[in-house]
Length: 112
Image 1 (tube, one colour):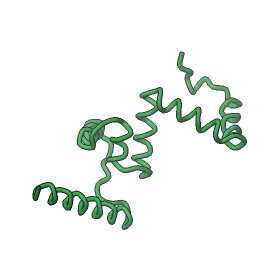
Image 2 (cartoon, rainbow, N blue to C red):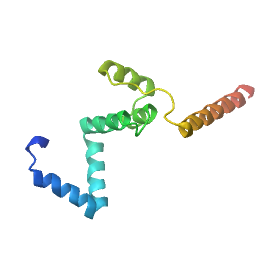
Image 3 (cartoon, helix red, strand yellow):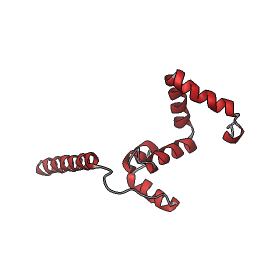
Image 4 (tube, rainbow, N blue to C red):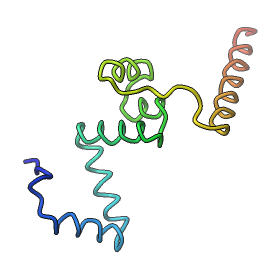
């Protein structure tokens, strides 16, 4: 039976926050398990992280067991704004490095 968050007593929420301060590993384990086992929560957490700029579309797709193109189409259908392009210089450099590596690998395979 799923608990409705609106029916949780405030003290339970407060105690979960305190538990996170006292025993962070225990709370992290519980939250990780919840996210892994509940698909609706998993979707919401991952999409929220994407929308907040904590992860990119590729990482969101990987975590959701989808391809980037499939997730992009789903976001468009749902009206979730897409973030395109690099978030910062470090991310842009990492993307360039990945592309160069891919091209180098492809060139070697083509010669074989």
